[in-house]
Structures are given as structure tokens and as C-alpha cells.
Image (cartoon, rainbow, N blue to C red; front, side):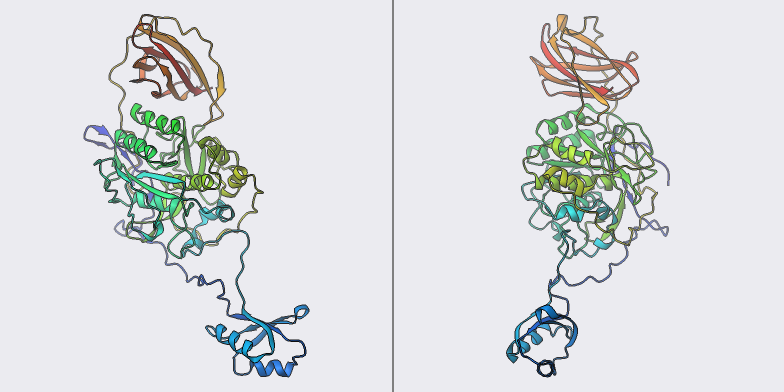
Length: 548
């Protein structure tokens, strides 16, 4: 299939999903994952063995008489305790226990129970094939927490089949940002797959295990049946989710152009304490991809089972972490399919963030992000700010516990190949460059001295804050940068002001608003100018973040 191309709908460059589905070559039909092998019953006593303690003085002849007709054979002994472990016919364990107790020859008789290590290994049929989650050492993290209903994770995508057993009792009211209604029916499957990777219940004996089993599930529909939407729709979904209690937001969507409305929505989420996680894109590029590249977003690349960046995955210093990019997901029908791409990697991190927040409910979004980035393991095949996330290490870092030893990885691998072909054109950003810009300013730069501090999102960025008033209604400042994403936030404003980013005589981005307004753009290496315009002598404060 062809490489990514921009798709334009209704005069707007559209946001669509960038994921890869595992497909067969026969008529491009989606191929289901292999049927799962039978799994043991979840009954903790289902071993088929009985443990018996014989009374003092009971002879071997007496023991044989007690066992006669029960079909039991001695498997092994614990001589120091006077105990024998008996193999008995399947299903006859309770009968054998009752018969031995009635014989009067034993001090106790009981079924032999199964015990587990400290890791929590789910009994979901596809767990043995979930190599990505195992590689993250998720079972060790689950030994600390499997999630909390106090944490809500919103998935902004094509919707969800809310009646599925994987989310029983955990779905909170959602929102359709396309129609302005509560109908979040998934008419594409992309949203259902992403949601299941993050939030499918674990250890319930069905389909797959997501990362956070107890977190509340908030479906927010921002993509239509073609997995296409607009920046304004996504922005509306972001603000709605935040206003209705979402702590973590997953956005498996995006594009290559910046958008003031979506940038402002991300800033809104950040200012309300939410963590926004977004896929880095499938363009085999280091060029910024939005919303993942916006400040305040945890950008996620995709890696394979060898911790090597997939060839399709975007990368660069603006990408924060990586996660397995080939995972199993649950479709609206309830069937399990393989689901690949950075759209698949992003909900891994979003679900893990919800899990971590469940274990440390007083943590901030910055704490959660720091735990994920500071414990990430190195990857190969590309450059990102941190590395591949590790659930056990991040949990230990956040909760102060000892890091659990690595969990054994399943022997089977998901069916997607390491470089899948896209099933649809990857997403592109919706918004064109602003058509208007304020008049150039000849006024001096604000008088206050800037102070640099490392950015919380990437260590290679610097933030400068300044404030003042607008002589003759305008003020400009120039900043140097190595190039890449830059953002300007109005930290204070006595009235509505316009913020414009220019470089090389071109307007890169512009926006109008009051305190909290954020304008973002990708700036070239060298210098760029920030201009603030408004009422004469209007007071303002700005914060400018860019690559050092």
C-alpha cells in the first residue's frame, strides 16, 4: 500500500487514525488472531491432588485400606510432617477428602491448592500471546495495583461498544464531539481496539488483559466511521473529558500541521492537572507530529519485541517514550485482532499511566510522566527523549517499592510482522496556517529579564518568562533555538491579546485570547519572534518554550 498522504475533507485537512491492522493478502480481509489454547480453570484448587495427614500409629496397611476403592495413588511424601500427596481421578477430589475424613485415620485431608509468585498473571485466553505487556513487566506492576475506580481514563477516538464484558461496571458517560450527543457507538473499530489495550479487564477469563483493570472508562468519540475528524472536534473532546473528570487522555490520532485550537485544548488539559498521551505518528519521520509534539503531551513511539523502533514509527527528541507497537485489541464485535502502529503503542502508555495513578492517587501528572520517562529502558533504531516504558520500574519509582524482578515473557508472539502495511492513510493535521497576522512591531522587547528553566516535557527545551505592558499596543521579543516545536502561553492578560510567532518574515502561528492562551508552531533553527498586540498599555505576561 502507498505511504502516508494528506486527505482533505470538506475543505479541512482531516485528522484520521494512524494504526496498522494485521491483514491477509486474500481480498484484504482482516485476519483474526489464532484461536487461543485451552487455559486451566480459574479454580485455585484445580490441581487434581489431595494432601492427607495420617494419624500417629496408622500403619501402611491401614493407609492402603483407607485408600482402597478411591482410585488414589501416592504422588510423594513429606515425611517430616507425616503427610502424603495423593493423585486422584479428576473431579473426585471432594469425594476422596470426605472419605478420608470419615475413615478416622487422618488428622486432615484437603485439596492441594495452587499458589503463585508475587506477580499477578491474568487468566485471559490471549495473555500467553501478549508479548508487549509481558515485556513491560506488567504482572510485577499488577502485584502492587490493578487499578482504581478513582482514576478515569478517556480515550478520544472512534468510540466504544460500552456493553462489552471487558468494561462491565466501569464505563462512565461519554461524549460524541461530532454530534454533540452521548452516542459513542464505535462505527470504525479503531477506538474499541485502542480502549481495550489500555483498559480491558484482566483476569476475568475473556479475551485480553489491558493495562488498567479497574480504572473508569470514558469513551469520547472524535473520529467518524472513516476514523476521520477535525482539530476543533478533537479539542472539544479534550475539554469535555477534562471537565468531566478524566485524569488521563489517550489520543491515537494527529497530523503534521499545528493548530491553535488543539494546542489551546492541550494547555487547558494540562492546567487542569490531566496527563495527555498521544501517538507519535507512522510517517518514518523525525518531523514533529501533532498533538504529540505539543508541549505538555507525552508522545509515544512504537517498538518491537527486541526494543527496536519500528521502521514506520516517527522519532526524534520531541518523542518522549516508546511502547510495544504490536498488540492484541478487542473489536466492537468482541473478537480479538492484532492491532499495530503508534496508535497501538499510545494506549499502552495511557493505560499504564492510569495504573500508576491508581497506586499513587496523590501524584500529579508531572509525577506520573517523570516515573515513566526516568525508568524507561534504552531502545535502538531511532532517537527519542527517554526509552521504552517499564511498568514494574515505573511503579517502584512512584510508590517507593523495590523494583520487581523481570517477569518471564510468553513464548508466543503476536501475529503482526515488524513492519506492517497501513490499512488506511495515516493521519494528517486539520488546520491550515492562520490567514491573518498583526502588524509588525517596532517596539522594544519587554524590559523584564527572562529566566530559563528546563522544560518538564523534554530535557532539551528551555522556557523563558517575561511580562510588561504594550507601548502603542504592541511588543516583540526574539528568541534563539536549535529548531523544532515552540509554544507561547499567555500567563497573564489585562484584556484579550493576540500572540503571533514569526520567523524569516513568515507568520507561523497566531492566536487571540486571554490568560491561558497557547500558540504553537514548528520554528526553524536560528531565531524567531514573538509579538503580542492589543490595547495600548495593556499588561501581559508570556512564557516561551522552545528547543535550546
